[in-house]
Length: 432
Image (cartoon, rainbow, N blue to C red; front, top):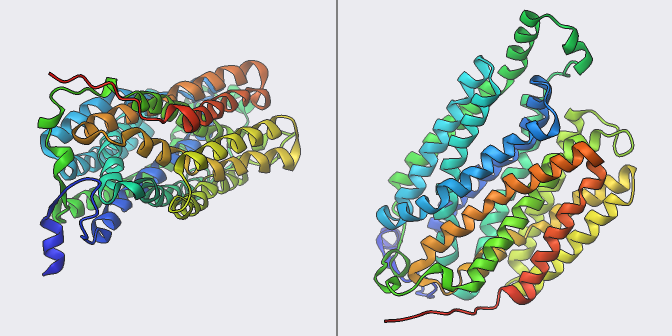
């Protein structure tokens, strides 16, 4: 009976009410795993579809542009959706939308058509946006405010578990055969080339059907489980005379999310091609895809460590140190070759770990009834994962992958600034 009482209780955000939140937190944490898993598969789709459709880096990285631009397009409407139906129904809507996107990979592979693949990714990312806007703040506010960063780091650790498993499993399922050389493809007749592309593109069908069914099942499970309602952030009467644009720590935090996601995605998306370079790893794409798991695995380990450390150490300090070390590691990879260049860039994942959840919780701190809209703005900033990787791809086509990594270094410098200065709450609230 106690469990049922907890499930139906309306609670106040940021207050230690003595209620056991472990069950709802465990349920919501499964969502973090799913969107991490599916997002990391983009790192496998890029080299795969690059080969199938004979694309350069700029065109191949339209995968990330399509995927992460959806965050900018759908995040603010997702915040309004939360205002209208609450966090739980928004999560269910997000899962069903993601399932639809996963099933759209079937016609995209059957044609095959690169624009259709991009369309499927946009739908998948639209659902993921709803999920991110609802689940991230829900975890942060479901308990005492002082442990919000630690709590979100723990949930994000399972997100990183998904991103760790994703590239390894995706590499085995999607990159199962060695692709033909571009020169060979250019010599094939049009019918033979079309048949080859159908054969290669079809490797995504079974995995994404399974993912779609899993998302449907998870959506039904969330719909059937009663989750606590967070009264102080779902009731908006107190926000009549306030605006998210008056909270500078939120605005600067959105910039922090923009550059963080851009840096993380840029690095992760280039790893397979980077490791395949003769002067770096000189390994096949399939082997390189397995090594990408170490990058995301470092983020998983770091988030478990960060969750524990943030119980004792200020989140700002941890964030600042992590950002500076990440910048140093990227610079080290740029200045070296071979295994040193490989493992220094992989090690960046460990220090990326605490950045997103820490920036997110620092940015929504004290927003109250504006938490949903603030979360929408922060998730919109994930569009950095579309823009910054595309800029780096443009640079890589001209100066090479190795030198193009200077862009993430600039991103980490800004994050260090936000940790020390930008995250300080300077709210200019006007009241009538």
